[in-house]
Length: 254
Ligand code: PEP
Image 1 (spheres, helix red, strand yellow):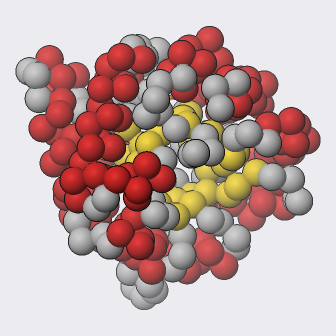
Image 2 (cartoon, rainbow, N blue to C red):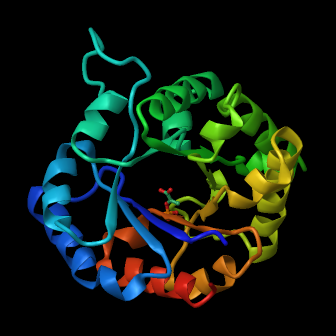
């Protein structure tokens, strides 16, 4: 049984006051959603104030990115150990905006994944095809290659702490959501890759999230698919009611 993970990626949104207010609003009602694991990923500058606003509520804290080196002359970067030192437990890696706006490669994502796991930080490793790749019938090939590259050399023991997020690039922030069938096809293929590389038991335990224009009105259908184990949510995670409505939809499917 995989507990659905409902993760909010706030991206470069909110400010000091609104980040704490959003976290407080989510924390206040978190107890209603015990069938799902809730996670918020604010901008790194607000991680500690969001942590404080969450207090003892059952809402996890995650970062949106990190650098693979442990410390040193890497101006502007933050390390995995810095994140764990402020009680973050997850980090989003290889988000399509990191890949396509900032040029991150599978190799970069792999180094970060290894570093996160080494610091006991759980990586949410994102994969997803561009619209032209889908239209050219290359979705499976692209996802397989990102899976291989981003997760190269990860042992079975470490893979148990990894979350995979399938986020078709054409569905992120566009309002164009993948159909449940389109998403499930990719998720099932990712699960098969986990079976092939590791074993069926491990593959059954790894959570594979869907991301890309998830909203309260489309969440239930997506989350009811056999291999969709939660959601990575951008826009809709900026409103506590919408984020929690998606958590509610996931609770209804378990
Ligand atoms: C995301 O940022 O990972 C995302 C899926 O964004 P949105 O929900 O806005 O499409």
